[in-house]
Length: 187
Image (cartoon, rainbow, N blue to C red; front, side):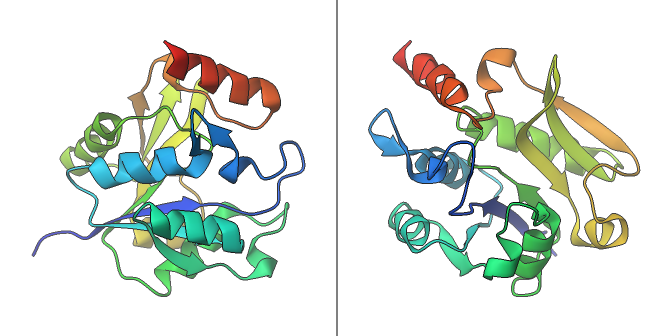
């Protein structure tokens, strides 16, 4: 039986350091567009789900081809762990493999996603996490629902690293990060 590979894109409406960052315009498109578009280009992802508490993010996500699951406000606070949002999605949708794609990492490619999935499937590991030379870059996390339920994190058990170049490892949390991503797309 083929494995169901599910992408989950967690996109809260609130952000203190860079307000409304998921819908900020980067090179003519909302930031979240880049993650949805890249996920939809993957050869392996069966479904692309955006988990959000925000109506505007939900509308934009649906427009660009993602399925949307409304996240309860209690799972969308600043101190709400992303793992709880993942479990909220997994309570509604069955999957064999979970691929977490944060919308704040717009420079990952479909090839990155597919290679990371291959790395996970071809090796007996608990998780695959994308990293640059500076460490985890927030772009790709892969595991199974069973392992996530057991460990409550991607950072447990046997972890394999999916290497990404520093220039594509921008994780947008500040205006400066947003400018780095903008500069990348100007090349």
